Length: 239
Image (cartoon, rainbow, N blue to C red; front, side, top):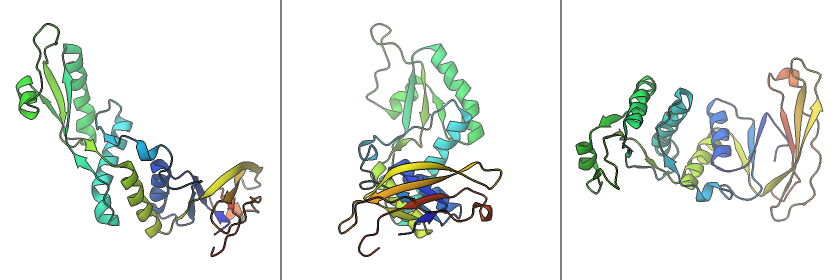
């Protein structure tokens, strides 16, 4: 295992592996990910995996659209299915204020390029025959809805495995059973950066020496525009 890397990602959930994948996608090959147990062993394995495109924020909306587009192309890129099921999504409105919100959202969606439709109660019923449109009493009347045909859900663990394959195929490295035990800021002499980061870790792999050791000196940061993150790991048989 290497003891120095330009970037060390700590945590092997879907967010960490996605970070590694996108660094590799940008051409960064000297990047590693450390996971103390197994990939997806944290909250990723039981995440719901819903993919709603609706968001009033232009920035967050772009992230949502990018994510959905990425999940559609990952299987062909990596050969790993991500269990993406496009089901569509109905957001119902029972008052004028809610419909006004959906009308306002149209500007954001049109700018980002998110497919949507503002639909009538009849169209709601056509899309979802089990919908109760309201009786004006205990059940408010549905006056309209926002429909996203591209919404759906995904299996987060499957997505993580696809991102892993994509990252590794581009030169990134992943070390499971490797716990980070310390992150230490040290002084840097290379302006304009004021510090670099050293990471100490240990491995839980069979036949490993369980004692973590302090990270050694990093490569000269002046040769690299990014202050490097340094990681050391106990050696194990076959490393």
